[in-house]
Amino acid sequence: MFKAAVFPGSFDPITLGHVDLVKRSIPLFDQIIVAVGINSQKSALFPLETRLEWLEEVFSPYPTVQIDYFHGLTVRFCQEKSAHYILRGLRNASDFDYEKTISQLNTIMGDHLETLFFISQPEYSHISSTIVREIIRGGGDVSPFVPASIAKNIQENHL
Image (cartoon, rainbow, N blue to C red):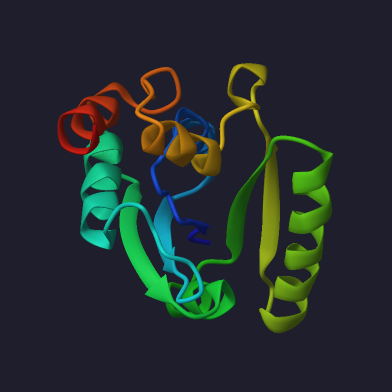
């Protein structure tokens, strides 16, 4: 049976924690779809096109990783892609409480849809896109938190 997983997120911007989760997932699946969810309630710091380019660049060495985006419910996107797994990262207990609820709702709405949780490696557990965006807005150095090529691009274009 072909095993496909979706790793949904805003990736605004992608962090080293995101990259680590995908790399750790690769041996488990035939295909991983890293998908930018478009949330009309949120305004992103970076345009969708930029985030997709960054994801393509970071994951280009991994042939089983595909990049995509979607509007609406993650469950529907998973059904469209015949993916039976959702990947999520957990940094702390707050993440677990929130993600557990979303996972249970997805299980009810999605036929045979399982959420797999990956505990953040200690060196990445303090990193979030929200914090990285605040560092960018404040003119700080994000190189310890995002892939090197992304940090360079942010520095050249946003400071």
